[in-house]
Length: 176
Image 1 (cartoon, helix red, strand yellow):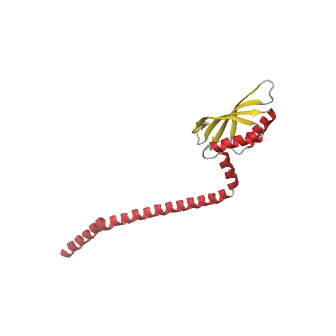
Image 2 (cartoon, helix red, strand yellow):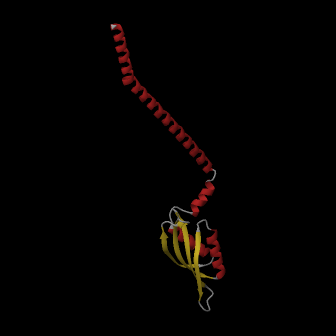
């Protein structure tokens, strides 16, 4: 009888030890294995992501010429001195005299179709004088320039008995 009781007590102690010591460690091990699997999946996802980014980067290298054209059309800042120089050079190249340039407004961001945009607009007022054919050439140069330049308004006046006409332009130039 004593042996049976001792066997039962040993068996109970064994079960108690299993439930109190071994099973919690097994659960910790399972939890750790799940975390390792999650981290491995995350690492694999990031590796695929960076591989995809490198492929896209290589693909973009094929379009450097086109991207440089976009960069020149939409520079990062308004670059007003370069713009003024371009306007002066273009007006003299077409046979006009640039008499006045005023910066009217610098808009920080423009909303396009209800969505905010990162594109900035700079409004300028120009006054040039010269013959009409030269003015047409000047507008053609503005239209063909790499910069995004929009003519917003145009007015002109001619003094009696003078060959040159005074043209007032309001233009809008875009940048990032």
